[in-house]
Image (cartoon, rainbow over all chains, first blue to last red; front, side, top):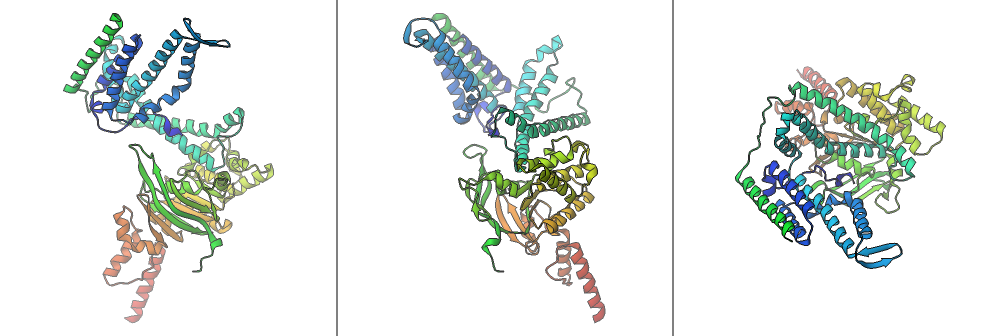
Length: 266
Length: 294
């Protein structure tokens, strides 16, 4: 059950997208998101679909994994789609009781649904093909210019990578503690809300303690290896653009230009 | 030996378990594992890290359901639709690795009471059970009101084991109970487990990766490798295959090697030596015999 969470879960296969520089992928995701927000016609969404399908195809990650992330936002998706469907004014198609469905409503809600789904799937392409470490490396490097205005970019990205690294560890720990308490007769499933909340105590207390213990251990280990922030720190594998990255940037440029052209011309 | 059906407490038939079926992470954790465990037996399960021992024991109290195969407890199929898994978990007490990580209550006594409370016993009974279990693991009244978090590592572990014992299980499974303890703490804990076995007459299953630890205590060894059950027999039978054990990343207790070496040098101490004490007696006997002959 807990294994279903895909956030920060890298899918280890070798593909064109896996080999790209993390900065290229970050930028690509950004481009894709921008293109989704300026899209206002079927043609624009068609373009975005093509872009996404190509990315998924190249990534060699099973589509099933890509769609897993959608489960988490299903409720949000249903709510926003139905609000747009029932509450948009315009040419009325059906009417029953207090609800009416308009031609514009259908259009807006379909676009809204597609936009949300594409957003999630698009970012999943990035997180499934990039290790958390590579991702924060890419972020650190791309946002390096912020250091000029005294934003501790390195520290923030270090915290991010540690947080990401700890997600699977804590999930595993939760699973373990849950099992240990179930072996002592704990019941996490039945009962009303108050009983369920109470049943969480034997799970949450050990989990917090273990998180604290791990944090202290990690801080100690980092200090023992003389970690003192980002100044003067070099990298074992510095990020470097390759030919594929440059080609990919060109591809982004073409995609973005077409998207903008479509928005202005139609 | 005559095998009585009533005696068989746990029976596994061709258990298979696959992690992450149908994904890139797919991995066999158990492969056609079959065995029978009799009531009152003291069994050791041994295997290298990742050999499937932890997965196997989690099957025994129904925390994991096998991908295929059958598992019987006291003659009943635990995968039958109406089978009460919560009752099974009370009868098969499982102490996880580093069990002290599951402690959560404000004091030792209430933590141990967690199990029996979940069994919905009367308050008197709950308290009696908790106190009895704490006594069994060698913790006296002075510990009752202490916070479990201010105890030493060995004491915490005892509290956690008492927490499982308090449910009065018929079978006690311990996963690496001495991991992370110093040699003294390890010996004490093992002695207590032996005491426990004598007093409660439980079936005990001990999981370990160290031959030395279990050889002294268990009646029977199950050896796991890459999800398969590769050897099943008394420690003496298993240790005879020390070459095979080495090939799967395990080793027989050090004393086995000394006895083998002596045999090569022409000093035959016999085939059934697994502990240092037995070796000592055999060597003394051998010297005496030699002196007489000389």
